[in-house]
Length: 273
Image (cartoon, rainbow, N blue to C red):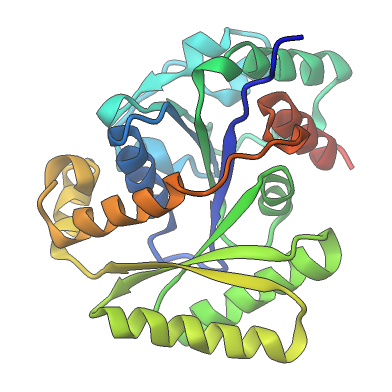
């Protein structure tokens, strides 16, 4: 029997807005694509569709059109920088929570058909502790928390970890500290989060690294481009490449959680509860 191709599914999330979560999702995806990985970036913020804004994309079709049967998955996929592909969301559309059995089956089949052409699926979730964030986190192998030097960021990240661990059985988290002024700041903020979490929760936090504050990010954003694409020699781009190298070394899942159809099945089943 043919083996099933495993896909690394990573949910990029944060406890609050303003920490650069979507910027991290875009540039980590691009850095992985530059390493030869076949990357699909799914815009999981079904209410705001951030990825399209960040990259200046105006999609003809979105995930909502696919769910409603108005197009095929190949029609939805957009070619992004570095060869990565993007599944755009639709602002204000919450149809994911109300799928019929036929829509459910069709969505699973659509993604399953392209599983062999994906190595990494990165999901840029919404911000906070909403239902869609929980759904995406539960359906992924890796939950990557983006935090920054802001008391509210640490507090809201703690609240998100508590929700996902106590209520939904997720006990391992990766942590990326964003917009630091030096590497020591990244380690310091991670240690603060670990100390806070360890006082009350039984979870495992793993430090992925830190992304430096860099004005090139703002400049790239104004041009609706990824900083790793437009300023590849910037210190920020270098940090994303180092981060991607670490992510690329994560072991591939060997159980059903590594199958793309399992991800979609889990996502939809959680959404329908």
